[in-house]
Amino acid sequence: MTAISLSPLDLSIAAALVAFDAILSVVLRLQLHRQVLIAGARMVVQLVAVGFILRAVFALHHPAATLAVVLVMSAIAAREIAARPEQKFRGLTGLGLSAGGVAIATVVTVGLALLTAIRPHPWYDPRYAVTLVGIILGSVLNSGSLTLDSMLGGVARLRPGIEAQLALGASFHEATFPLLREAIRRSLLPIINQMSAAGVITLPGIMTGQILAGLDPLEAVKYQILLMFLLAGASGLTSFIIGFGALRRLTDDRQRLRLDRLR
Amino acid sequence: MRRRNGRIDGAMPGAAETRPPTARAARLTVRELTSPLAGPFDLELAPGEAAAISGPSGSGKSLFLRMVADLDPNTGQVALDGAARETMSPTDWRRRAPYVAAESGWWCDGVAEHFSPDRLAAARELGAEVGLAAELFDGPVLRLSTGEKQRLAIIRALVLDPPALLLDEPTAPLDPDSTRQMETILRRRLRGGLSLVVVTHDAHQAKRLGARHYLMRDRKMSPA
Image (cartoon, rainbow over all chains, first blue to last red; front, side, top):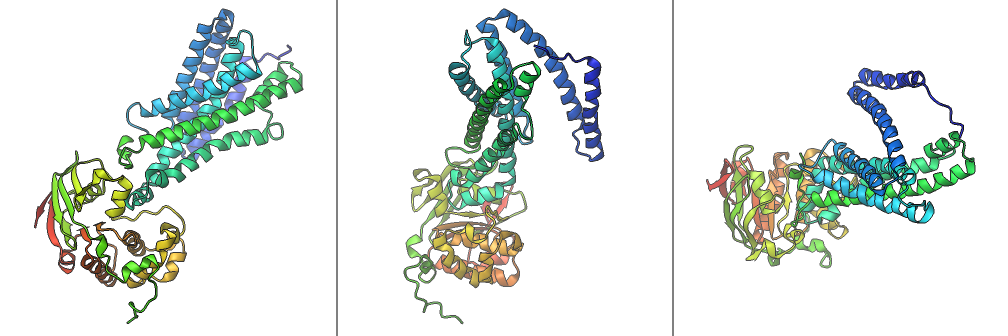
């Protein structure tokens, strides 16, 4: 392994690029500069902390420690998905939906990978389990938040049309199906882009990382392909679960549109 | 004058326009209709009867119509000819007592897509009666004026041949001519047995429709 070590100075030079985004936001009045800077700082703190935690967990090599890390990561992903949309559910509905989507999508895809493709010994080896969950959660977060945001933003925007259909006797499903379709479609675009661009326009992160770390490119490619499939599956699953779940919470037993459940 | 009765359209759903839809007549009963926001409301309309509700903005007129249509959570009894709302699916109920909001809602790009294909002919006929050119149906919603949208939204409900109809300020964006034409259609439906509840700011409209007049104030309704 011949990875080149980075110095703090190297990183601070790159940080200037984030500052550029913030300036752009101020100039164009996007009101995003605070978010950009906070997100940037947050990313640094989080990653450094995770570096230390992973070191410790790898050293422990205990299923409980692996599970604890995975649970914490998933919980944070669920919280982020629920927090992202401009329109939000009242109470804990958003969090519950996100948690459900995250849990099912992650367990299914990571489980599949650990039990069929990668099969580490033991299967809970944190070097595989934790990293896989981490990669999957990135996609889950993307598609989950896009789905929830399109659903909740869309339903408020399309309310007159949806209610007009309901008022004429259309079922809630008929009236809102286009909304669900649009939300799932939007949430799948990132992974489609990622797959189409992989290797041609972009060199995917895992592959690059492994090559930088000295692995044979073809071995790295195989890993990347597996991961892309997992990411695609996880995106679709999350989107489907959160989209359907959100629709269910937006209606009731009399097929009304319950926007009073949003705040 | 066009020969309305000479048309050979017995097999088409639009035929309902040429013979009075007496089979669709029903008595609308509303009892103790209450929500956390409004009520309790009571109302009884015999087939062919109309109720006109007026009152200041925010007094609960739209809320009342939405509660009857079961679009907002509510308790109480609403029935058509004794058949309670709860005994049928919400979609069946709303098809029998459709609600047309004051601001029309649209969900497709083309006008015609908002009508089921087998009702489009009937819709065009009704459109012609309220001054809507047939071409409007083939164009996009984007090109419609507010008044055209409003007329089309009412027609969307009328072509369902419902026994009851809930209209929220149906003629507010219409000019006097279109208003009269729309009222002519509504009167014809009333003669055919329709139970009509209409929210209106126009006191004369209630008279022209022969409607009983109600006043809504502070989310309570009383005969005027």
